[in-house]
Image (cartoon, rainbow, N blue to C red):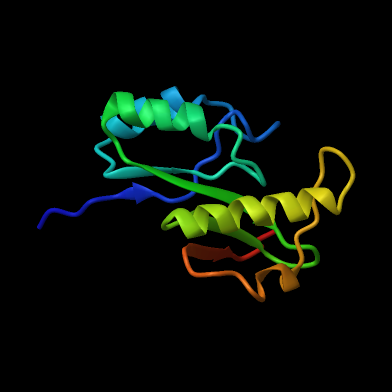
Length: 129
């Protein structure tokens, strides 16, 4: 049986003080380990996606676009883009969350998910601290 593995939650150096590796380094390592795909899910940003797309193109390993966010007074969620509609919804969520907070921060509310279109896959992460 051939099982394929895709990492669905990976932070790059665009997640300040959390991710250390560049998209190139992450894709090179994922390729060496035989991954089928790699999701770049930096915290409340898509800033590293262009470099991730280039690394994906260069290695031939598919890129899954996404972002990790913390809900205010709630859990962490990883949002993965399924299509163009999902990409647009993720961009809107990031913009809304950043605009309601001071520079360098964000506030994502549960209500922000009430009227999202299809196209985003949510992975809710339990707080284990």
